[in-house]
Length: 107
Image 1 (spheres, rainbow, N blue to C red):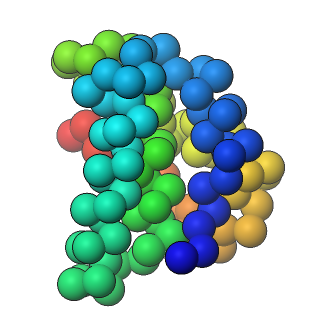
Image 2: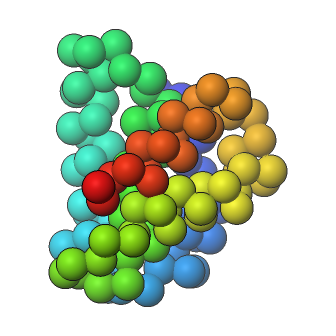
């Protein structure tokens, strides 16, 4: 399976991550979202790359493990920060889907 998720991208996201990396919204949660998302793409035809990237950005900017209604928009903005570096080969339409999915994740 080809993915745009690289060790360098994960390292950069982890460096700005503000909550417990091994907490309920940390890396193991992202892995479950990734795995379940891949199952859903097989059934629905959803864009695999967007779903993969959503799995690591959707909760990447949480400020706590509880109620944090702005973490979705912050995750979308983080993806935008990496647009020119880690996500430069992502087509514009795919990036727009990722941004919207993250942004609306909390609404």
